Structure formats: structure tokens, C-alpha cells
Length: 345
Ligand SMILES: NC(=O)c1ccc[n+]([C@@H]2O[C@H](COP(=O)([O-])OP(=O)(O)OC[C@H]3O[C@@H](n4cnc5c(N)ncnc54)[C@H](OP(=O)(O)O)[C@@H]3O)[C@@H](O)[C@H]2O)c1
Image (cartoon, rainbow, N blue to C red; front, side, top):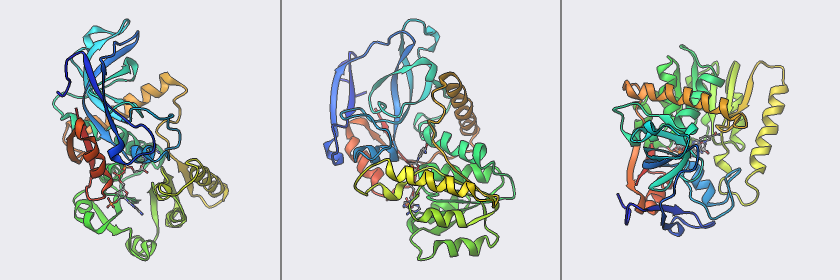
């Protein structure tokens, strides 16, 4: 533990559009949980693609600066507020927070806590929170991938992509996965056939492997390549778009690329060709809080159950102390690692 005293917490502040070195460490009084809240002592919190975008003010609906980043976490309940079962204290949970996770202690609504099974590693469980729910829902909820199908996973070496690859393989599907050449062995080890996304003609490479097209494409890149993803679909195939990574360094509005993508998907869905095209957003439906929480607990519970029985490899690329957040962010953004960089306060 890095606290100066047990009455203080350490957190990372993103003050504005800065290089990773501009992230600030701040100590403050340990917060007291209000009614319905739990104070979680964080054991692991992930460095996600979302924070790369937030650091550039390019995340779709990020809060105003300054704020504490941190999309998800795993930790042990240290204290509970009025109305929360005292039995939660000492138990390990996961939470999807979007922001706020990069701290030694975090206040979370107790209703948002999802139990982590006994015996699993905190960093491994952490690597499955936002990435696991995203992969699980896109694969089973949207594309409904079945044994014998062939799917294309863009970025099969990444956090979400590596889980999509493993879950699709577990479901009996054949996976073609794009990645940089340096990660092809890792992608093969997950059960996919790798294709270099820097190849001059990626669609041709995919067609060589799947001449009749693929049953589903999972695309986080967006931009002009989305058209290739759509054209690679087999009859009745499903395109699941879930990001616009190709536009992250473009100046201007963070919303425009997403809105353009929505329009394109709407247009494709209006075509009478049997394909479907969907944008996945992990926060969709959160206005109905009770249902959102129940579905989150169900889906993350399914992913955690696979982890507990050893069926999933969460691929933790590195465990970095919270004080070394700059190194963690630099590493995550270096493109050299495959898997999730996890901060361990
Ligand atoms: N919509 C949602 O609710 C939701 C939820 C979670 C995540 N996401 C999105 O999911 C995306 C991935 O997140 P992550 O945490 O998995 O990121 P990550 O771990 O950084 O992985 C990124 C992956 O993209 C690959 N890649 C880079 N450039 C590419 C290109 N031009 N074509 C194809 N692949 C390329 C990388 O391959 P190499 O490492 O081999 O270079 C890597 O496999 C992000 O855009 C994020 O915003 C969306």
C-alpha cells in the first residue's frame, strides 16, 4: 500500500489534454461512504483504450477536466455506508466505473458491485471487466456466434479482441484475427489465424481464408475500412462496430466520427440483403438502472465463471504500481504489449 496514512487515499488526476507525464498524483482525505455506497480498496484498475482518448479529449462523452480516470476496477470493500449490508466488508468485487478507478480507494454504489469468484487473481479478473462484458455481449448477445461459423476479429491481440477470439473459439467458431506482425504468435496461441492489418490488401487475405465471407466481423477501427468489414460478410452475416480507433488522432469533434458511423450503419441496415450492422455501446440501456445492473452482473458473472474454471486467459500485459501511472500509460500506448496493462495500487 502506498498511502501516507490510512486516513488518506492516493489518486491520479487527468488535468486536461496532456502527455502521460502531465498526469498528477494527489493525496486527499479518505472519503466516507454515503447511504447506499461502499468504499472499495482497489487491488487492480485497468489502463483502457478509453483513457487514451480521454487524455486527448476525444472520448465520446467524457466529463470536463480535471477528473480521475479509471474505467474499471477490482477491489475489496473496506467500509459501507448506511443501508448497505455490513457483510460486504472484506469481500472482493468488480465495478465498471468509466472514470474514477485510478485510486487506492473508490466510492461505488453498492448496487454496482459484481462479486468476483474466490481464488482468482485480482489483476486477471480486472482485465475481464469492461473488455469481458464487451466481448461477451457482442459475441453472444448481438452476433449470436455458433459452432462451425467463421468470424473476423479486428485487433485480435488487443484487450477486447483477445477475449472475442477466446470466447468465439470456446463457442466452436473459427477465428480470423488481424494484428500487427509482432503479435501473430500471440494471436495463434489464442486459437485464431492471424492476418497483418498492415498488409496492402487485408480483405483479399481474409477472402483467401474464407472465400464465402465471414459470419460476423467485430470492428473497433471504423473509418474507411468499415466498408471492407461490411463487404466481407457472408449472407446473413453481422457486422458489430464498437469503436472508431482510426480517428483518435484526428483534430476536431470527438462525436462526429461516431455520428458518421451511425449513419452508415443505418443505411446498411435499410438495404434488403440480409446482413445486419450494429453499433455496440457497453453503456446502452443504463437509464433503466435496475435492469442495467442485473444484466451487467449476469454477463460479467458468466465471464468470471469461465475465468474461475480456467477456460479464459485474461492476458495481463503488466502490473504497474499506481505511483508509476505514467510508465503504465506509456507502456499501454506503446503498441508493444499484447493484453491489458493493470495498475495495482
Ligand atoms: N463500444 C464500447 O462499449 C467499447 C467497450 C470497450 C472497448 N471499446 C473500444 O474497443 C477498442 C479496443 O479497446 P482495447 O482496450 O481492446 O484496445 P487495445 O488493447 O489497445 O487493442 C487495440 C487493438 O487494435 C489493434 N490495432 C491497432 N491498429 C489497428 C488497425 N489499423 N487495424 C486493426 N487493428 C488494429 C492492435 O493490434 P496490435 O497491438 O497488434 O498493433 C490491438 O490488437 C477501442 O477502440 C475502445 O474504445 C468499445
